[in-house]
Image (cartoon, rainbow, N blue to C red; front, side):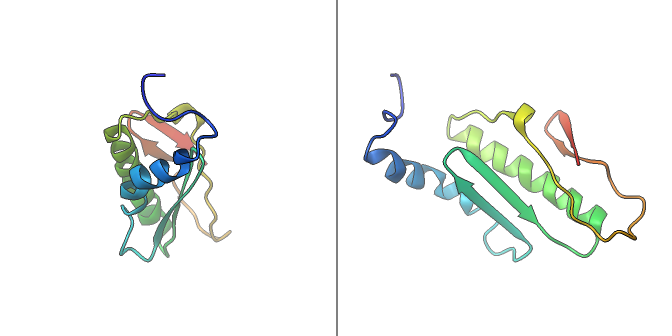
Length: 107
């Protein structure tokens, strides 16, 4: 093992909390955005009244989170990334995806 702690280690969750605190704080102060983490999964929730603007905001926030995670020396599996869009049924002309670095994730 070159880095980290063994799986099941008592220190594992404590060290993870210390390291990932900077990721969780990215959306601090923005009441329309939340970042939640469980184990090695990260959930980003962005809400808003304008769907196009909210999708753009989600793309920006996801990319900021990825940058911060990579800054910790960790990798992000963008190929496993999923996006879900909850919207008003009457909305028209909506984006079909969000941009994550050099790839697009479809809704």
